[in-house]
Amino acid sequence: AQRREAREEAERAAKEKARAEAAARRRAEYQRMKAAHEQAQQAAAAAEAAKAAAVEAPIEPATAEGCKPTAEEESVAASAPAVAVEGAAVSSSPQRKATARPVTDTIVASALLKRRQELAAEGVKERRLKAEAMRREKEAQEAAARE
Picture: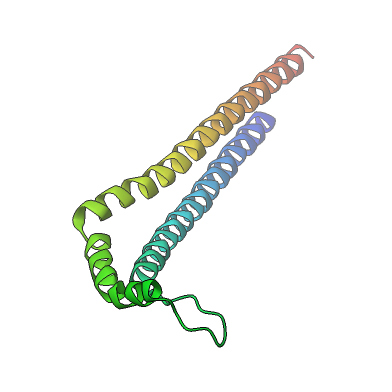
């Protein structure tokens, strides 16, 4: 009876330990996913800012040292402010943002889905291992009962 109680206590302790480890793994995974999501949001914001900066950058005539710009280059440089303003209006339009956002969301969502699938596969493996351990333990108990 004492051996059985000790064995049951050991089983309870093992189950509790496994539960705590699984909870710790889930918390760590959640933190990793949260960090990856934040990083993706920051990267998207940085890309949007870079795009806006590129649109607003003035177009300068390409001249070699000591050469005068051509009339065409000067006209392009003169029209650059208007182009920049027009481009800025396009880049901040709701339609533009609406098209840029889903791409980032899709990338993040696909990463989340992939990780969920990996975790599910990991859970299946854990359950198989637990079932195997329980089966072995049961066999050991039956063998001990026969003795």
